[in-house]
Image (cartoon, rainbow, N blue to C red; front, side, top):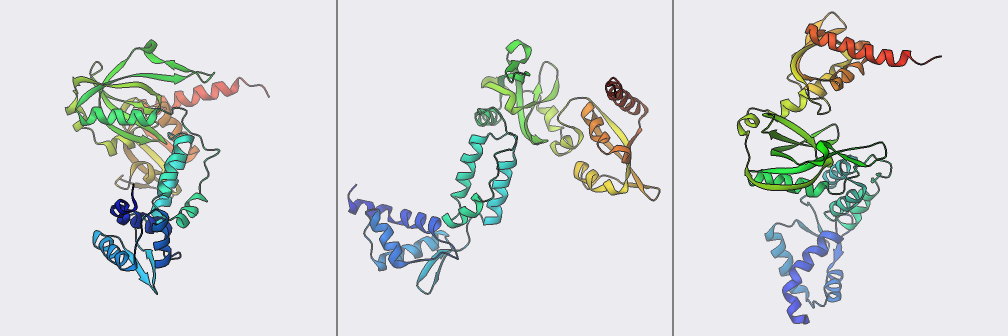
Length: 329
C-alpha cells in the first residue's frame, strides 16, 4: 500500500498508539507520535495530528495534554476492573490452562503496555485445578445458539474413569434436551435444560458435554423454566446434585451467620435461639452434598427438621462412621 493511501489509516494508528503506549505515568511527545506514524509509512505534520487528536476526543477518547505531552486518561476498563477479570479467569476451574493464558493476554491488551505488566505480575495459574476439556468454549457457543434460535440440542455426556479416560453415559447415546440457561455452581459451569422424556428441569456439567449440535426441533418446557427462579435455584442445589426439594430447619451457632448468608442470601429469616444459636428454615435440594455441607460445620450446625431429613442425615453419618470403624489401630 502506497504511503499516500495509508493516510486513511492514520486516525486508527494514532488511536491504537495512544491506547497501548500511554497512561498518566507514561505520556508521549508530539515528536514520538510523528516518529511512530512514520515507522508505519504514514507521514504526518503536527497540525494534522492536532486535528486528529481533537477528532478522537470528539469520538469519546479521554486524551489529556500536559506540558506538550499526551496520554489517555480514563478507559473503558480501569486497572482494578481488569484485575478482577484476570482473577476471575485464572481462578475459574472450567477454563483450561491454554485458554486461561489466551484470555489473560487479551485482557492485558485493554490496558497500556505498562499497566499490562501490573496485570501480568498477578498471574498465578500453574498449580490451579483446571478443566481437561479444551472444547468447552465451543460447547458454550453451541448451547447459546440453541437458546438464541429456540431449538433443542443434542450431545453426549461423559464421566472420567480412574485411568482418566472418558466413559460415556447411556453407552454413548445422544442426549436431547431444551437448553434454557447456563449457571455457575461450585466453580463449575452448568447447562440448565428441560428433559422432555422425564418432564423435569435437569442440569449438566458443560465441560463433560461433547459432540454438541443444534437440532431443528423447537424447544419445549418453557413453562417449567419460566417458573424457575435461577437465583433461588442456585441457593437450593448443593454441588448441582439432584434430590427432593424440602423445607429444612437448621440450628446454627451465631458465629456461622456469615456462612449462612453467603449460602442463602440476606433475605433468609434468622430467628434467635438462646444466646449462642439461631434457627433458619430454608428450601434445599436434599442430597448427600447437602449433608456434607452441614457436616462441615461440625456440632455448630444441626438439622432439626423435618424428621425424615433428620433420619437421612443420621443414616448418612452412620454410613461414614461404619467405613472408618473398619480400620484397625
